[in-house]
View: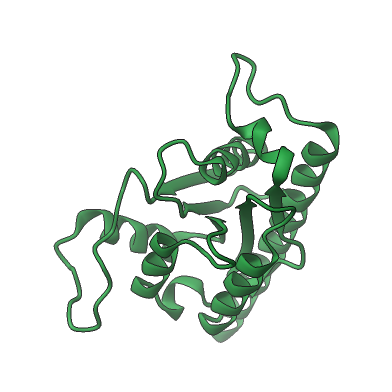
Length: 195
């Protein structure tokens, strides 16, 4: 597999969020496969409130995020599910971004929900990705209920994750990376034909 640039946006405003820990676990798995992975944590790097009247050119973290996304081959959006929706900080970050950041890029949607699965937040994320002209990965990833407990504490050897969820995480990330590589190859082929 070709080395790719992946950007993960962890969309929680909570220090010890299970969704951010799931993002970190995903970062390690993709890094172990030889990819360059950037984890942008919205808790540690908060963004200004979006306003169409302000461009926030002076906001360093926002410019870093935008530059990383322009250079990314694939994007992972990770959110907790709040009241059947994505987090406000992730929605705010996405409002700052545009088609130039997502166009023709594979995007994986990931959630952590207090219930069984974060279907509402994942469905909304995929709708936003379509509006930004990204390419939704056919599978999404969600942890809920007792599965979240595996990401609440990390031991010396990493997380103690149940085999079923661990297998699903590996499968979904593998599927996303395959799609990212395919889209990247097609985009490069189309670029070389047009030039």
